[in-house]
Image 1: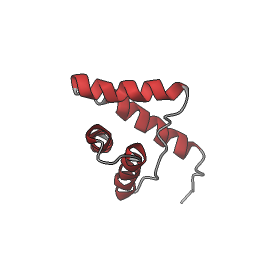
Image 2 (image 1 turned 90 degrees about the vertical axis):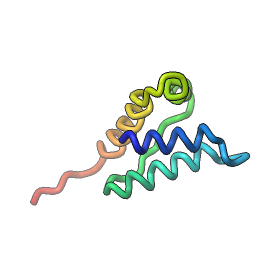
Image 3 (image 1 turned 60 degrees about the horizontal axis):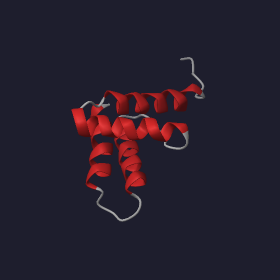
Length: 89
């Protein structure tokens, strides 16, 4: 998951576009997850989660600590898979 967090952070950090950097970062993160046969997720960045998301990014900037962003990614995966039906073989 660190590679997903790394790519997401790098796109947001370098800010290559005038608009859409967050969307591009989330798209790239989802493409990597799908490459590992995982479904795409939504990293919740609205309302109360926005501060947590921004703090996770600042934690990487200030301390190279990816754990908070990885945690948000895992939460997104958990939320996404919680509604998936399990199939018996």
